[in-house]
Image (cartoon, rainbow, N blue to C red; front, side):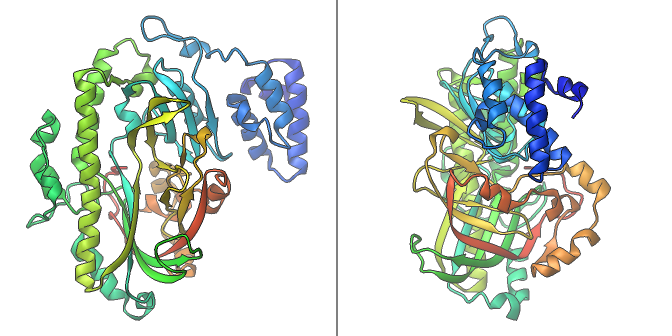
Amino acid sequence: MKEKELIQIGYTSKELREIAKQVFNRAINEGYSKKDAKRMLRVIIRNPIAFIQDNLWGELAKKLHAGNRENKLPIHHEYSGEIGRTTRAPYKIWGTDIDLESIQQIHNACSLPISVRGALMPDAHVGYGLPIGGVLATNNAVIPFAVGVDIACRVKMSVFDLSPMIIEENPSKLRKSIEQETRFGVGSTFTPRRYHPVMDLNWNISPVTKENKDKAWDQLGTSGSGNHFVEFGILEIFTDELPVPQGFYLALLTHSGSRGTGALVCEYYSKIARQRLRNLPHELQHLAWLSLEGHDGQEYWESMQLMGKYAQANHECIHTHISKNLGVPIIWTIENHHNFAWKEIHDGKEVIVHRKGATPAERGQLGIIPGSMASPAFIVKGLGNEESLCSAAHGAGRLMSRTQAKKTLSWKKVEYLLKEQKVHVITAGIDEIPLVYKDIHKVMKEQEDLVIPLAVFHPRIVKMAPAGEKPED
Protein backbone atom coordinates (compact mmCIF):
# COMPACT_ATOMS: atom_id res chain seq x y z
CA MET A 1 0.00 0.00 0.00
CA LYS A 2 1.59 3.26 -1.14
CA GLU A 3 1.84 6.39 1.02
CA LYS A 4 0.14 8.45 -1.69
CA GLU A 5 -2.90 6.14 -1.75
CA LEU A 6 -3.27 6.30 2.02
CA ILE A 7 -3.09 10.09 2.00
CA GLN A 8 -5.75 10.24 -0.72
CA ILE A 9 -8.03 8.05 1.40
CA GLY A 10 -7.58 10.37 4.36
CA TYR A 11 -4.74 8.91 6.46
CA THR A 12 -2.94 12.22 6.77
CA SER A 13 -0.73 11.51 9.78
CA LYS A 14 2.40 9.36 9.51
CA GLU A 15 1.42 7.37 12.61
CA LEU A 16 -1.96 6.46 11.13
CA ARG A 17 -0.39 5.48 7.81
CA GLU A 18 2.03 3.12 9.55
CA ILE A 19 -0.78 1.39 11.42
CA ALA A 20 -2.91 1.28 8.26
CA LYS A 21 -0.10 -0.37 6.29
CA GLN A 22 0.44 -2.99 9.02
CA VAL A 23 -3.26 -3.83 9.19
CA PHE A 24 -3.50 -3.85 5.38
CA ASN A 25 -0.69 -6.43 5.19
CA ARG A 26 -2.32 -8.59 7.88
CA ALA A 27 -5.58 -8.48 5.94
CA ILE A 28 -3.82 -9.72 2.79
CA ASN A 29 -2.25 -12.56 4.79
CA GLU A 30 -5.71 -13.51 6.11
CA GLY A 31 -7.12 -13.83 2.60
CA TYR A 32 -8.41 -10.37 1.70
CA SER A 33 -7.83 -9.24 -1.88
CA LYS A 34 -5.95 -5.94 -2.24
CA LYS A 35 -9.13 -4.33 -3.57
CA ASP A 36 -11.20 -5.43 -0.57
CA ALA A 37 -8.50 -4.45 1.93
CA LYS A 38 -8.27 -0.96 0.40
CA ARG A 39 -12.04 -0.64 0.50
CA MET A 40 -12.01 -1.57 4.18
CA LEU A 41 -9.50 1.21 4.89
CA ARG A 42 -11.96 3.64 3.28
CA VAL A 43 -14.94 2.27 5.22
CA ILE A 44 -13.16 2.35 8.60
CA ILE A 45 -11.97 5.93 8.29
CA ARG A 46 -15.59 6.96 7.71
CA ASN A 47 -16.97 5.09 10.72
CA PRO A 48 -14.19 3.80 13.01
CA ILE A 49 -16.47 3.16 15.99
CA ALA A 50 -18.20 0.34 14.11
CA PHE A 51 -14.92 -1.64 13.96
CA ILE A 52 -13.38 -0.99 17.40
CA GLN A 53 -14.13 -4.56 18.58
CA ASP A 54 -12.95 -6.19 15.35
CA ASN A 55 -9.97 -8.54 15.81
CA LEU A 56 -8.30 -7.45 12.57
CA TRP A 57 -9.29 -3.82 12.12
CA GLY A 58 -9.80 -2.84 15.76
CA GLU A 59 -6.33 -1.35 16.39
CA LEU A 60 -6.69 1.07 13.47
CA ALA A 61 -10.31 1.87 14.36
CA LYS A 62 -9.41 2.74 17.97
CA LYS A 63 -6.66 5.09 16.84
CA LEU A 64 -8.96 6.80 14.36
CA HIS A 65 -11.76 7.13 16.90
CA ALA A 66 -9.42 8.56 19.52
CA GLY A 67 -8.38 11.31 17.12
CA ASN A 68 -11.97 12.03 16.13
CA ARG A 69 -13.70 12.35 19.49
CA GLU A 70 -14.79 15.90 18.89
CA ASN A 71 -16.73 14.41 15.94
CA LYS A 72 -16.31 17.46 13.70
CA LEU A 73 -17.90 17.54 10.29
CA PRO A 74 -15.79 17.72 7.14
CA ILE A 75 -15.48 21.31 5.86
CA HIS A 76 -17.90 20.78 2.99
CA HIS A 77 -20.65 19.78 5.41
CA GLU A 78 -20.43 22.88 7.59
CA TYR A 79 -22.94 25.53 6.65
CA SER A 80 -24.18 28.65 8.38
CA GLY A 81 -27.59 30.00 9.33
CA GLU A 82 -30.47 28.45 11.26
CA ILE A 83 -29.74 24.99 9.82
CA GLY A 84 -26.11 24.74 10.85
CA ARG A 85 -24.39 22.43 13.32
CA THR A 86 -20.71 21.60 13.79
CA THR A 87 -21.08 18.03 15.07
CA ARG A 88 -23.03 15.14 13.62
CA ALA A 89 -25.35 12.63 15.22
CA PRO A 90 -23.75 9.20 15.76
CA TYR A 91 -24.36 6.33 13.37
CA LYS A 92 -23.24 2.71 13.06
CA ILE A 93 -22.66 0.57 9.97
CA TRP A 94 -23.42 -3.13 9.57
CA GLY A 95 -21.63 -5.02 6.82
CA THR A 96 -18.43 -4.43 4.88
CA ASP A 97 -19.67 -4.53 1.28
CA ILE A 98 -20.98 -0.96 1.24
CA ASP A 99 -20.00 1.70 -1.28
CA LEU A 100 -18.45 4.95 -0.10
CA GLU A 101 -21.22 7.10 -1.53
CA SER A 102 -23.80 5.36 0.67
CA ILE A 103 -21.61 5.92 3.71
CA GLN A 104 -21.30 9.58 2.74
CA GLN A 105 -25.09 9.81 2.47
CA ILE A 106 -25.72 8.50 6.00
CA HIS A 107 -22.93 10.81 7.20
CA ASN A 108 -24.69 13.75 5.54
CA ALA A 109 -28.06 12.75 7.01
CA CYS A 110 -26.59 12.65 10.50
CA SER A 111 -25.28 16.20 10.03
CA LEU A 112 -28.81 17.64 9.97
CA PRO A 113 -29.79 19.62 13.08
CA ILE A 114 -32.89 17.45 13.48
CA SER A 115 -30.91 14.17 13.43
CA VAL A 116 -30.59 12.14 16.64
CA ARG A 117 -29.02 8.85 15.53
CA GLY A 118 -28.52 6.75 12.41
CA ALA A 119 -27.68 3.26 11.18
CA LEU A 120 -26.73 1.65 7.88
CA MET A 121 -27.81 -1.90 7.08
CA PRO A 122 -25.61 -4.46 5.24
CA ASP A 123 -27.75 -4.27 2.07
CA ALA A 124 -27.15 -0.52 1.75
CA HIS A 125 -26.71 1.21 -1.59
CA VAL A 126 -27.12 4.74 -2.92
CA GLY A 127 -30.52 6.42 -2.81
CA TYR A 128 -31.91 9.96 -2.94
CA GLY A 129 -30.85 11.78 0.23
CA LEU A 130 -30.83 8.83 2.61
CA PRO A 131 -29.27 5.65 1.18
CA ILE A 132 -31.38 2.55 0.63
CA GLY A 133 -30.78 0.56 3.81
CA GLY A 134 -30.49 3.77 5.81
CA VAL A 135 -32.16 4.31 9.18
CA LEU A 136 -32.43 7.79 10.65
CA ALA A 137 -34.01 8.99 13.89
CA THR A 138 -35.02 12.66 13.95
CA ASN A 139 -36.45 15.04 16.49
CA ASN A 140 -40.11 15.86 15.71
CA ALA A 141 -39.52 16.15 11.97
CA VAL A 142 -40.11 13.98 8.92
CA ILE A 143 -38.04 13.87 5.72
CA PRO A 144 -40.13 12.81 2.69
CA PHE A 145 -37.15 11.49 0.71
CA ALA A 146 -35.86 9.62 3.79
CA VAL A 147 -39.15 7.73 3.67
CA GLY A 148 -38.76 7.29 -0.07
CA VAL A 149 -40.66 7.67 -3.31
CA ASP A 150 -42.45 4.33 -2.99
CA ILE A 151 -44.06 5.03 0.39
CA ALA A 152 -44.75 1.91 2.48
CA CYS A 153 -43.23 -0.49 -0.03
CA ARG A 154 -43.69 -3.86 1.63
CA VAL A 155 -43.38 -7.63 1.34
CA LYS A 156 -46.12 -10.14 2.10
CA MET A 157 -46.13 -13.93 2.20
CA SER A 158 -49.14 -16.24 2.17
CA VAL A 159 -48.89 -19.95 2.94
CA PHE A 160 -51.40 -22.13 1.10
CA ASP A 161 -53.10 -25.36 2.04
CA LEU A 162 -51.60 -27.01 -1.01
CA SER A 163 -48.64 -29.33 -1.52
CA PRO A 164 -45.52 -27.62 -2.93
CA MET A 165 -45.36 -30.49 -5.42
CA ILE A 166 -47.76 -28.51 -7.61
CA ILE A 167 -44.74 -26.41 -8.65
CA GLU A 168 -43.40 -29.40 -10.57
CA GLU A 169 -46.69 -31.13 -11.36
CA ASN A 170 -48.78 -28.19 -12.58
CA PRO A 171 -46.65 -25.01 -12.83
CA SER A 172 -48.88 -23.52 -15.56
CA LYS A 173 -51.74 -23.22 -13.04
CA LEU A 174 -49.55 -21.11 -10.77
CA ARG A 175 -48.20 -19.00 -13.64
CA LYS A 176 -51.71 -18.24 -14.91
CA SER A 177 -52.91 -17.22 -11.47
CA ILE A 178 -50.14 -14.61 -11.23
CA GLU A 179 -50.72 -13.26 -14.73
CA GLN A 180 -54.49 -13.08 -14.28
CA GLU A 181 -54.57 -11.55 -10.80
CA THR A 182 -52.03 -8.73 -10.90
CA ARG A 183 -50.50 -6.32 -13.41
CA PHE A 184 -46.94 -5.11 -13.90
CA GLY A 185 -45.63 -1.86 -15.31
CA VAL A 186 -45.66 1.86 -14.44
CA GLY A 187 -49.14 2.61 -15.81
CA SER A 188 -50.71 -0.76 -15.06
CA THR A 189 -54.38 -0.74 -13.99
CA PHE A 190 -57.34 -3.06 -13.49
CA THR A 191 -60.58 -2.89 -15.48
CA PRO A 192 -62.98 -3.37 -13.82
CA ARG A 193 -61.40 -1.96 -10.68
CA ARG A 194 -60.60 -4.11 -7.67
CA TYR A 195 -62.44 -3.19 -4.48
CA HIS A 196 -61.00 -2.81 -1.01
CA PRO A 197 -62.28 -0.86 2.05
CA VAL A 198 -59.16 1.35 1.85
CA MET A 199 -60.94 3.29 -0.89
CA ASP A 200 -63.70 4.20 1.58
CA LEU A 201 -61.24 6.06 3.81
CA ASN A 202 -60.83 9.85 3.77
CA TRP A 203 -58.71 10.66 0.71
CA ASN A 204 -59.29 14.40 1.16
CA ILE A 205 -56.56 14.71 3.80
CA SER A 206 -54.21 16.37 1.28
CA PRO A 207 -54.41 17.91 -2.20
CA VAL A 208 -52.35 15.03 -3.63
CA THR A 209 -54.41 12.15 -2.28
CA LYS A 210 -57.68 13.93 -3.14
CA GLU A 211 -56.61 14.58 -6.72
CA ASN A 212 -55.23 11.06 -7.26
CA LYS A 213 -57.83 8.87 -5.56
CA ASP A 214 -59.18 7.63 -8.89
CA LYS A 215 -55.66 6.86 -10.13
CA ALA A 216 -54.94 4.92 -6.95
CA TRP A 217 -58.17 2.97 -7.30
CA ASP A 218 -57.36 2.11 -10.93
CA GLN A 219 -53.98 0.74 -9.78
CA LEU A 220 -55.28 -1.17 -6.77
CA GLY A 221 -54.00 -4.75 -6.90
CA THR A 222 -51.17 -4.00 -9.36
CA SER A 223 -47.47 -4.58 -8.75
CA GLY A 224 -45.67 -1.79 -10.60
CA SER A 225 -42.10 -2.08 -11.83
CA GLY A 226 -38.48 -1.88 -10.65
CA ASN A 227 -37.59 -4.52 -8.08
CA HIS A 228 -41.23 -5.41 -7.39
CA PHE A 229 -42.20 -9.04 -7.87
CA VAL A 230 -44.78 -11.78 -7.37
CA GLU A 231 -43.41 -15.29 -6.93
CA PHE A 232 -44.41 -18.78 -5.87
CA GLY A 233 -41.92 -20.95 -4.04
CA ILE A 234 -41.27 -23.51 -1.36
CA LEU A 235 -41.28 -22.38 2.26
CA GLU A 236 -39.26 -24.47 4.71
CA ILE A 237 -40.15 -23.86 8.36
CA PHE A 238 -37.55 -25.23 10.80
CA THR A 239 -38.85 -23.92 14.13
CA ASP A 240 -41.88 -24.29 16.38
CA GLU A 241 -42.04 -20.52 16.96
CA LEU A 242 -44.36 -19.83 14.00
CA PRO A 243 -48.15 -20.34 13.82
CA VAL A 244 -47.76 -23.25 11.35
CA PRO A 245 -45.84 -26.47 12.11
CA GLN A 246 -42.39 -27.31 10.83
CA GLY A 247 -42.34 -28.62 7.27
CA PHE A 248 -42.51 -27.63 3.60
CA TYR A 249 -45.29 -25.48 2.14
CA LEU A 250 -46.38 -23.75 -1.05
CA ALA A 251 -46.08 -20.01 -0.47
CA LEU A 252 -46.64 -16.78 -2.38
CA LEU A 253 -44.29 -13.82 -1.85
CA THR A 254 -45.01 -10.31 -3.16
CA HIS A 255 -43.08 -7.04 -3.09
CA SER A 256 -44.60 -3.70 -4.09
CA GLY A 257 -45.79 -0.42 -2.60
CA SER A 258 -48.09 2.56 -3.01
CA ARG A 259 -47.63 2.93 -6.75
CA GLY A 260 -47.93 6.27 -8.52
CA THR A 261 -49.89 8.06 -5.82
CA GLY A 262 -47.23 7.35 -3.19
CA ALA A 263 -44.56 8.80 -5.49
CA LEU A 264 -46.62 11.95 -6.03
CA VAL A 265 -47.07 12.41 -2.28
CA CYS A 266 -43.30 12.21 -1.78
CA GLU A 267 -42.51 14.66 -4.57
CA TYR A 268 -45.17 17.18 -3.53
CA TYR A 269 -44.12 17.46 0.11
CA SER A 270 -40.40 17.23 -0.59
CA LYS A 271 -40.77 20.24 -2.88
CA ILE A 272 -42.46 22.18 -0.06
CA ALA A 273 -39.67 21.20 2.33
CA ARG A 274 -36.95 22.30 -0.12
CA GLN A 275 -38.67 25.63 -0.67
CA ARG A 276 -38.70 26.27 3.07
CA LEU A 277 -35.05 25.30 3.49
CA ARG A 278 -33.54 27.16 0.56
CA ASN A 279 -30.12 27.48 2.19
CA LEU A 280 -29.52 23.72 2.30
CA PRO A 281 -26.38 22.86 0.32
CA HIS A 282 -26.82 20.82 -2.83
CA GLU A 283 -25.84 17.48 -1.26
CA LEU A 284 -28.52 17.86 1.43
CA GLN A 285 -31.45 19.04 -0.67
CA HIS A 286 -33.09 15.61 -0.80
CA LEU A 287 -32.94 15.59 3.01
CA ALA A 288 -35.19 18.65 3.39
CA TRP A 289 -37.58 18.09 6.28
CA LEU A 290 -40.97 19.16 7.57
CA SER A 291 -41.67 19.89 11.23
CA LEU A 292 -44.48 17.77 12.65
CA GLU A 293 -45.64 20.86 14.50
CA GLY A 294 -46.52 22.54 11.19
CA HIS A 295 -49.51 22.06 8.91
CA ASP A 296 -47.50 20.63 5.99
CA GLY A 297 -45.68 18.18 8.23
CA GLN A 298 -48.94 16.91 9.69
CA GLU A 299 -50.51 16.71 6.24
CA TYR A 300 -47.58 14.68 4.91
CA TRP A 301 -47.73 12.41 7.98
CA GLU A 302 -51.42 11.66 7.44
CA SER A 303 -50.84 11.12 3.71
CA MET A 304 -47.99 8.71 4.50
CA GLN A 305 -50.27 6.75 6.83
CA LEU A 306 -52.91 6.52 4.11
CA MET A 307 -50.33 5.33 1.59
CA GLY A 308 -49.30 2.66 4.11
CA LYS A 309 -52.87 1.37 4.26
CA TYR A 310 -53.15 1.57 0.47
CA ALA A 311 -49.93 -0.41 -0.08
CA GLN A 312 -51.17 -3.03 2.38
CA ALA A 313 -54.47 -3.20 0.46
CA ASN A 314 -52.59 -3.75 -2.82
CA HIS A 315 -50.97 -6.88 -1.40
CA GLU A 316 -54.20 -8.07 0.17
CA CYS A 317 -55.96 -7.82 -3.20
CA ILE A 318 -53.20 -9.77 -4.97
CA HIS A 319 -53.09 -12.56 -2.38
CA THR A 320 -56.86 -12.86 -2.00
CA HIS A 321 -57.51 -13.00 -5.74
CA ILE A 322 -54.71 -15.52 -6.36
CA SER A 323 -56.10 -17.69 -3.54
CA LYS A 324 -59.56 -17.58 -5.16
CA ASN A 325 -58.07 -18.26 -8.59
CA LEU A 326 -56.39 -21.40 -7.25
CA GLY A 327 -59.43 -22.39 -5.19
CA VAL A 328 -57.17 -22.95 -2.20
CA PRO A 329 -57.37 -21.29 1.24
CA ILE A 330 -54.56 -19.31 2.83
CA ILE A 331 -53.52 -20.84 6.17
CA TRP A 332 -51.13 -18.11 7.32
CA THR A 333 -49.87 -14.71 6.21
CA ILE A 334 -46.98 -12.51 7.32
CA GLU A 335 -45.98 -9.04 6.09
CA ASN A 336 -43.88 -6.01 6.92
CA HIS A 337 -43.11 -2.71 5.26
CA HIS A 338 -40.16 -0.41 4.77
CA ASN A 339 -39.96 3.10 3.23
CA PHE A 340 -41.86 4.53 6.17
CA ALA A 341 -41.48 6.63 9.31
CA TRP A 342 -42.57 5.59 12.79
CA LYS A 343 -42.93 7.36 16.13
CA GLU A 344 -40.83 5.30 18.53
CA ILE A 345 -39.08 5.60 21.87
CA HIS A 346 -35.28 5.38 21.75
CA ASP A 347 -32.77 6.56 24.34
CA GLY A 348 -35.70 7.48 26.56
CA LYS A 349 -37.39 9.95 24.19
CA GLU A 350 -39.84 9.89 21.31
CA VAL A 351 -38.19 10.20 17.90
CA ILE A 352 -39.25 9.79 14.28
CA VAL A 353 -37.51 6.71 12.86
CA HIS A 354 -37.17 6.69 9.06
CA ARG A 355 -36.47 3.25 7.56
CA LYS A 356 -35.69 3.63 3.88
CA GLY A 357 -35.26 0.08 2.67
CA ALA A 358 -34.87 -1.28 6.19
CA THR A 359 -37.04 -3.79 8.07
CA PRO A 360 -38.45 -3.09 11.55
CA ALA A 361 -36.86 -5.61 13.95
CA GLU A 362 -38.13 -5.04 17.49
CA ARG A 363 -37.46 -7.90 19.89
CA GLY A 364 -39.68 -10.82 18.86
CA GLN A 365 -41.10 -9.00 15.80
CA LEU A 366 -41.50 -11.18 12.71
CA GLY A 367 -40.40 -9.98 9.30
CA ILE A 368 -39.38 -11.07 5.80
CA ILE A 369 -36.04 -10.38 4.12
CA PRO A 370 -35.98 -11.39 0.41
CA GLY A 371 -32.90 -12.22 -1.64
CA SER A 372 -33.13 -12.25 -5.44
CA MET A 373 -35.11 -14.27 -7.98
CA ALA A 374 -32.57 -17.11 -7.62
CA SER A 375 -31.72 -16.83 -3.93
CA PRO A 376 -33.79 -17.43 -0.80
CA ALA A 377 -35.89 -15.13 1.32
CA PHE A 378 -35.93 -15.48 5.10
CA ILE A 379 -38.65 -15.18 7.69
CA VAL A 380 -36.88 -13.64 10.67
CA LYS A 381 -37.43 -12.69 14.29
CA GLY A 382 -36.10 -9.34 15.45
CA LEU A 383 -33.62 -9.10 18.31
CA GLY A 384 -34.45 -5.49 19.21
CA ASN A 385 -30.90 -4.21 18.83
CA GLU A 386 -31.01 -0.57 19.93
CA GLU A 387 -27.78 0.28 18.10
CA SER A 388 -29.60 -0.30 14.80
CA LEU A 389 -32.72 1.50 16.08
CA CYS A 390 -34.30 -1.98 16.09
CA SER A 391 -33.88 -2.39 12.33
CA ALA A 392 -32.48 -4.91 9.85
CA ALA A 393 -31.81 -5.20 6.10
CA HIS A 394 -34.82 -5.33 3.77
CA GLY A 395 -33.15 -7.51 1.13
CA ALA A 396 -29.85 -8.38 -0.50
CA GLY A 397 -29.13 -4.87 -1.81
CA ARG A 398 -27.84 -3.90 -5.24
CA LEU A 399 -24.25 -4.37 -6.33
CA MET A 400 -24.72 -2.83 -9.74
CA SER A 401 -26.68 0.12 -11.10
CA ARG A 402 -29.48 -0.49 -13.57
CA THR A 403 -27.59 1.38 -16.28
CA GLN A 404 -24.47 -0.73 -15.80
CA ALA A 405 -26.51 -3.93 -15.74
CA LYS A 406 -28.18 -3.11 -19.05
CA LYS A 407 -24.82 -2.31 -20.64
CA THR A 408 -22.83 -5.31 -19.40
CA LEU A 409 -25.16 -8.23 -18.61
CA SER A 410 -27.20 -10.71 -20.60
CA TRP A 411 -29.65 -13.47 -19.75
CA LYS A 412 -27.11 -16.01 -21.00
CA LYS A 413 -24.91 -15.14 -18.03
CA VAL A 414 -27.60 -16.23 -15.58
CA GLU A 415 -29.44 -19.04 -17.37
CA TYR A 416 -27.32 -21.71 -15.72
CA LEU A 417 -28.04 -20.29 -12.27
CA LEU A 418 -31.79 -20.14 -12.82
CA LYS A 419 -31.78 -23.70 -14.13
CA GLU A 420 -29.68 -24.89 -11.18
CA GLN A 421 -32.09 -23.27 -8.71
CA LYS A 422 -35.13 -24.56 -10.63
CA VAL A 423 -36.42 -21.03 -11.13
CA HIS A 424 -38.78 -20.13 -13.98
CA VAL A 425 -38.94 -16.41 -14.79
CA ILE A 426 -42.13 -15.32 -16.54
CA THR A 427 -40.92 -11.78 -17.25
CA ALA A 428 -38.21 -9.50 -15.80
CA GLY A 429 -35.70 -6.92 -16.94
CA ILE A 430 -31.98 -7.65 -17.26
CA ASP A 431 -31.40 -5.07 -14.50
CA GLU A 432 -33.06 -7.42 -11.98
CA ILE A 433 -31.15 -10.65 -12.56
CA PRO A 434 -29.33 -12.16 -9.55
CA LEU A 435 -25.91 -10.90 -10.65
CA VAL A 436 -26.87 -7.31 -9.78
CA TYR A 437 -27.51 -8.19 -6.12
CA LYS A 438 -25.31 -8.87 -3.12
CA ASP A 439 -25.05 -12.36 -1.62
CA ILE A 440 -28.08 -12.65 0.68
CA HIS A 441 -26.28 -15.25 2.80
CA LYS A 442 -23.48 -12.78 3.50
CA VAL A 443 -26.01 -10.06 4.31
CA MET A 444 -27.74 -12.38 6.80
CA LYS A 445 -24.39 -13.31 8.36
CA GLU A 446 -23.52 -9.64 8.81
CA GLN A 447 -26.71 -8.95 10.76
CA GLU A 448 -26.74 -11.91 13.14
CA ASP A 449 -27.07 -9.44 16.02
CA LEU A 450 -30.20 -7.92 14.46
CA VAL A 451 -32.41 -10.87 13.44
CA ILE A 452 -32.67 -14.66 13.71
CA PRO A 453 -33.95 -16.74 10.71
CA LEU A 454 -36.95 -18.98 11.45
CA ALA A 455 -37.79 -20.18 7.94
CA VAL A 456 -36.44 -20.00 4.40
CA PHE A 457 -38.35 -19.46 1.15
CA HIS A 458 -36.98 -20.72 -2.19
CA PRO A 459 -38.40 -18.92 -5.28
CA ARG A 460 -39.54 -21.13 -8.13
CA ILE A 461 -41.95 -19.13 -10.37
CA VAL A 462 -41.14 -15.42 -10.66
CA LYS A 463 -42.82 -12.51 -12.42
CA MET A 464 -41.52 -8.93 -12.53
CA ALA A 465 -42.11 -6.00 -14.85
CA PRO A 466 -40.88 -6.75 -18.38
CA ALA A 467 -37.74 -5.18 -19.80
CA GLY A 468 -37.91 -1.49 -20.62
CA GLU A 469 -40.16 -0.44 -17.75
CA LYS A 470 -39.10 2.60 -15.71
CA PRO A 471 -38.27 1.51 -12.12
CA GLU A 472 -40.50 2.66 -9.24
CA ASP A 473 -38.38 1.35 -6.33
